[in-house]
Image (cartoon, rainbow, N blue to C red; front, side, top):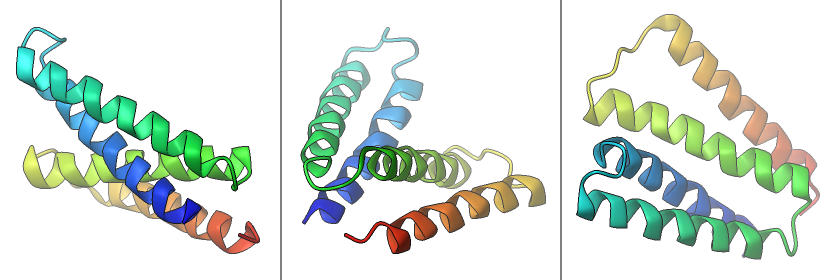
Amino acid sequence: MSWFLLLIAGLLEVAWAAGLKTSEGFTRLWPSVFTVVTALGSFVLLALAMRQLPLGTAYAVWTGIGAVGAFIFGAVMMGEALTVARVASASLIVIGLVGLKLSSGH
C-alpha cells in the first residue's frame, strides 16, 4: 500500500507542477487553487508512504516520478522539445527509480 500511495503522491506532484505553470505565478485563481490542493494531497500521501518506506527511497521516488512525469507532460501537452539528451536523461531517472524500488526490501 505504501508504494501505491507514493505513486499517487508522485502523480499529484506532476499535477501541481503543471498547475503551477498554468497559474502564471499564482495570478490565475483556479489554476492556483488546483496547484495548492494537489500539492497538499501530494505531501500528505508522501507522508503516509514514509510511515513504511525509508526516507531516502520515498523522497527520491516521489521527486523522480514528479520530474519524469513533468517532463512527459511538458513534452506531450505543452509542446516542449524532445531531444535525445533530454530523453536519455529522463530514462536514467527511471532506471534509478526502478533500482531504488528493487533494492528497498519493501
